[in-house]
Image 1: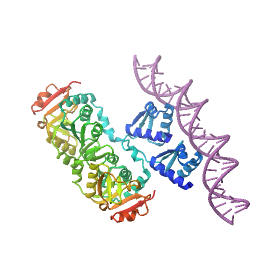
Image 2: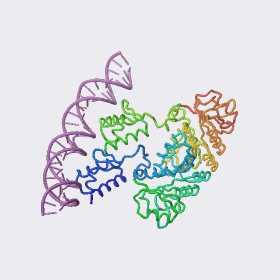
Image 3: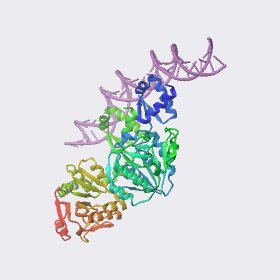
Image 4: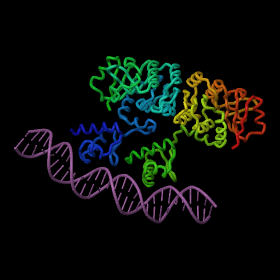
Length: 256
Length: 256
DNA sequence: GCATATATGATCAATAATAAGCAAAAACAG
DNA sequence: CTGTTTTTGCTTATTATTGATCATATATGC
């Protein structure tokens, strides 16, 4: 393995695990501790990792909730880059919809400079994060709480969704299957909410990191043809854009 | 765990709890007190925490819980006694409604032993408190967040309320006027929600401590004649029960 | 206000991690 | 092929982190 390969993989490992010890890495790659330290030193200069005694951690902006804490750290850099791109879709005065999920949560942090936005979400965490910001009109969909995702689902949420028409919906997903052309999620009621979000919005922007591509979960959310835009990180296959174009999805690939 | 991780988690802990003792932290992270003190010292320089004797506090408290936090301590003994009485009104299988507020919040703690209850609330804090308990079906009304009370109000909440019929509604208030025979609250939209809660329930139980009696606020919630029961602490005037009977309210006075 | 509890800061020793220097091996350029 | 550069592993000196100790400072109870 070349040095550059190793460094890339260390970075990948860190993005996934959010932490790594020098010793683990040296065993993982069968090189000496010194070599890992040199790698980390160089990575620290160019990329957003932070060295600490014993290893390195991913630099991540402040608070993460314990409830979804574990997953939130997966591919955090990808999600942040995706969120940075997604915010370009938002114009002052828009009425937007934020799906619950770790990717859309990153988008929240980018919204702090906005004003004159109407934001609807089914995530308690997102609402709490946005509640402080003046100039934003934030509404929470009600319903039953799914603790796994901190999403509110069920009749209350559905009924409230039917009261509104949204300009842009930002949706996350657990699986994106190119063969069947569908997006999926593990839970049926959550899928229902996502589907309603999509149908009740003029434009749908799907935010997903590359790890979701090719995955198929239990509950179908929607056909890819119902999606207008897809923002994804650059670790996708070369023909991903073309594949998605077949379903009429406009793909934006972001560099991390 | 790396030092940087530990410091990040201390900060996270502080953001949640807004305070932490050196001893708690040292046990939490399995390190010595000295280490925690060093961590806090460094965190104090870069982040917005303040060290004090025995621990540290958050400089700018996450005002979310703080606003209700202050009031929560007022007349706490009265509220707990009232809550203990209120729980006697609840039978297995009931569909109940919990208004947001510090008094109804005390009722939540009494519900932990129940199962087979449907609970609807417009308080995020109450939902989070109840979400863990198995056997309870908890639903949150959606809407706009009123930070002062952590209540969800507005069209989403109203629409959701119209979807349901409730056995017993537990309502708090800011003012109870015997002369005019009305209960009041400072905010119009909040008053609307409370009013709808009352009209959509077969029985309404008003929970109030003596400090609210005689007070009149800006927005009228309902006439006292719409209330079925009133639970109050024993620091009320001797003729309070009779006064309320004139409005057909069944008064329960609790000792503290 | 005084006595007692407890918390703190400074210091030190032990351990672990790192940086620096050096040499061997591999890759590279001419 | 030869000299040079790069990468790597090893050794050693240096540094960082931590827990323990103790004198001092601060809170708390009476």
